[in-house]
Image 1 (cartoon, rainbow, N blue to C red):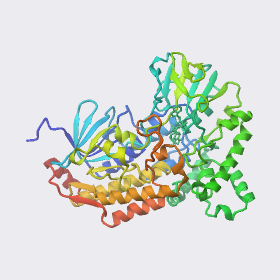
Image 2 (image 1 turned 180 degrees about the vertical axis):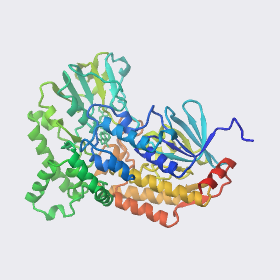
Image 3 (image 1 turned 30 degrees about the vertical axis):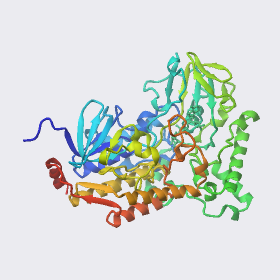
Image 4 (image 1 turned 135 degrees about the horizontal axis):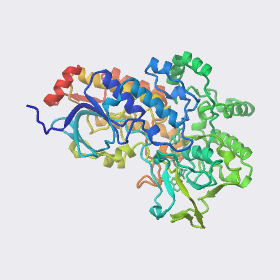
Length: 557
Ligand code: NAP
């Protein structure tokens, strides 16, 4: 007799209904697996459900960002802009979910608060915010890299009488900024999109900048029916190119040596790339930009010149030129009218390097120098990147080991997919996976396909438990860490190196090795080799599954 009080059991639970989770649940549904997806938010979409701030849009060409797995989706969906905006992106994800009838596998408002591995049963016990306990044999964490927004640690935030929100938590109902006095804190990729979009719509805009960022033009354009028809004929070629480039884009690095080319040729190339759409200026550039101080300094100076051309007030222009890092060693924001915004009389730049923020007041913000009054404060202050969403769940593996404690001392994974001592838990796009430094969905599809093949392997062999060996995890982590040695990125304070001044323990000082820097082709070769060698580094065992699970395993196999 089945125990009526036993928790709902699934073969696989996917956590997160973003781009990764949607595709993962589709693959599982296609296989007929007893699987469900738990999502904290009220609906699907992840990044594109949450980030509703004005100006939110892809920095990837839309047609390289979309899923590649379905010819029908590619044929039916019409991207309207080369770099599509948030409302359209959310529609797209809904279109995919509806087309494949995926909603029936998803549970919303179901934040997973804890996930504990039950070593006796070799199952995961998940505690959901509504009080339910669910169990599963395998858990796939598709939590997103940038899904935990972080606010400054400022006194008085609750005292502010106007409206204030982190960009990630932008209200679903329209926010009328017309004529308002608005503050934006931060000058990362998000702030740069917001500022370009709202500068000419608000009454007054004050930007609080701690450190400037190197940004370059997005050069967005409308996609006509003819453009779209041409894109559709090229999809195979587009995805083949994305698969062979380090960043998973159509942009391929210039393989000539920086110093083999004359200065005139370099500048001519940069002039061309600056006017082209997307990340070409970053990713079609010479590879030395990422590794060689001198090359990077020369190129950074070129971009500084562009900033000086675009910002009329020389003092403001100088404040917008980064001094502490070179171009491209942090994630490059792409912008539309960002620098021109500073030419408007209603836009003001406050350099927090001169006078840091002191506190939030009832009417605005106070720096160490003066008070500012606002109707709206926009916190574009970033994320507890990559490990943050995992840290927020009480994840406990073998011997009750807590993931958040383990990662406090060292981020360690195998392929960015497995974590030692956390059996049967997989991350298709985890820290140290190929996804973080690539055109995200390209990495996601690869990660999800790999995890799905792994699960099929497990089911075919009727294993109950799969875990990475300590040696394999140490080897991968060492490999990831070593790659930072050649990258100038290691010197920059950004989420690529695990920096976040608003999260305890992530303040500057220690690099956290979060990003796989080898590029997508090398990453894919590495994970494919592991699979081809019978998942070398992964230990499988038949740990005596519970009856329910055994039945599911047999059905699936
Ligand atoms: P971010 O790059 O981490 O930028 C956060 C900004 O807030 C920085 O300028 C930071 O200054 C500032 N800040 C943080 N705490 C502060 C404090 N206490 N006081 C004053 N300033 C503070 O975050 P983001 O802009 O949200 O971007 C994160 C990532 O999201 C991007 O790198 C990108 O990968 C992704 N993103 C993608 C898109 C897209 O694809 N279209 C768009 C937006 C974002 P410091 O630099 O001094 O720390």
